[in-house]
Length: 384
Image 1 (cartoon, rainbow, N blue to C red):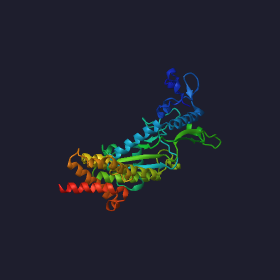
Image 2 (image 1 turned 120 degrees about the vertical axis):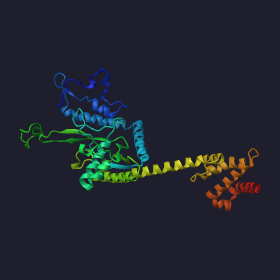
Image 3 (image 1 turned 90 degrees about the horizontal axis):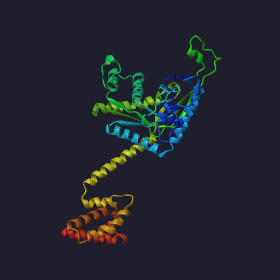
Image 4 (image 1 turned 60 degrees about the vertical axis):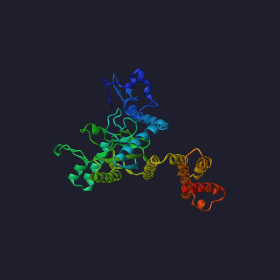
């Protein structure tokens, strides 16, 4: 039973009584923690939940399903994940995409009206793992299972005891974000000796009725992105980040994260599909960066041809059309200088030689006149 003597629930305020359902544009975590409305009266100024805890969790799960259908919620989540990924990349860190292989419990010990809490991201209103928790998971794995020297642990993770002095670790641990709004489910804990746990004078006998205690969990097959980066981007920092990334993957696979890992909760495995997608995104951004650099170094004519599809390998007909309608005509125009005409002719010849080499050497009827005009221009301006 939870008694509330002075701090009355917010929903009793007439202005806020519409909060009995999570608004469509609200933060689900804030609503879940602050607006529980399944209390029952128990005397003056006292309220209790008892069996109504499950009702509140179920209401939150329904609200999450409704919110996850909104395009805006997914956009906000994707933007947050992208910012985090970009920051880790700029810091020369490493990203891991890990998928829950079992149900995952985060923030069970957090304060909540229904006793068992949940870790909500403060701005996104969805499940997450704080960076401090990620750091603790890895540090515990290293100290318990890897046999790493204490001095190396201290260098990488920093100090935690006063006698170790104040020392910052060499690796930064980021909050682990779910890449899509997390699917939530309800789980039940059924202790059989409630009277014994409340008062040790009672015996832990078998005839006590089990007491179902509901709590919220993250469902299986939810992908989180984890990030680690060096404090200093030097050789030692890169070595430490590589080690930590490996340890993190091992810890999530073997010991898990969150509560109740001893009975199989919180196990993760690498999400290779998302990892491949991320690598493709990085490669695509790098190509775009190189394209912009190259474009900045172009002459005005080169840039205009580029915009007309000069380097489009998949759709050569796009530039072919522009060649016929614009570039051949401009090459033969009296309104531009001979220098510009020569540059156009050379670029058109290069395009044919690289994209349609066979046609340049032995043109068909469609290309014969175009190539003849280009070669004539090349010969004319080569003599000048």
